[in-house]
Image 1 (cartoon, helix red, strand yellow):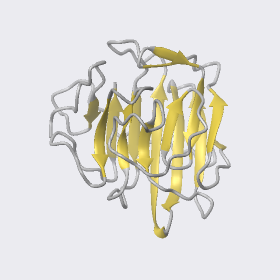
Image 2: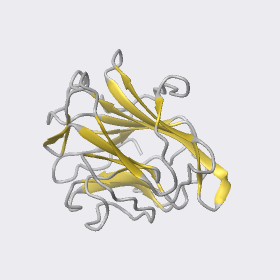
Image 3: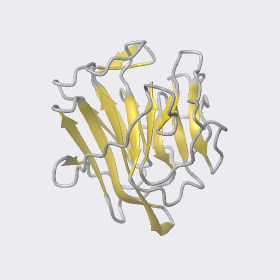
Image 4: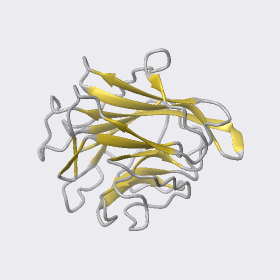
Length: 215
């Protein structure tokens, strides 16, 4: 498990915190947004598009620059604008999935029951953060997840000039039916870290304190 997943044909890899021989191995670096960030009032099966902060600049993803981000209540985000609300998760890449999806905990989540979704521009840390804070699974309200995705600005250099992305897991209560991964706009390129309890051989199983880097 000390190898990254990928690369895909564009060059993206997924590094996890067990990839000890790689300089791009991520560290778990949680910034709690409760009481700090701005709450996004998302209900069940809802996606909202917001502008990226001017201090952040543009988000370069698969070579294309975006100035907005779409955040779905079902545990995924995407650069740019979409009104998709897909809650049935699949292994990525998949052409019929939402374009440019980055799945943090892609499943049928229900923030209308409890929990919050926060966003925050951490200018000192050079990262735009979205946090799913104790959001439960639909129909399984006793199970919930606390996870955040951080999009790093250009002060974190990468080989391709695309922004580095890290995902940080404060919990891993029930990923048996969820997908974690990403793809391009056409659904032809991308990688999966886990999907419905399946992991590639190089991918460390999700647990509390796990960190991933997409770069």
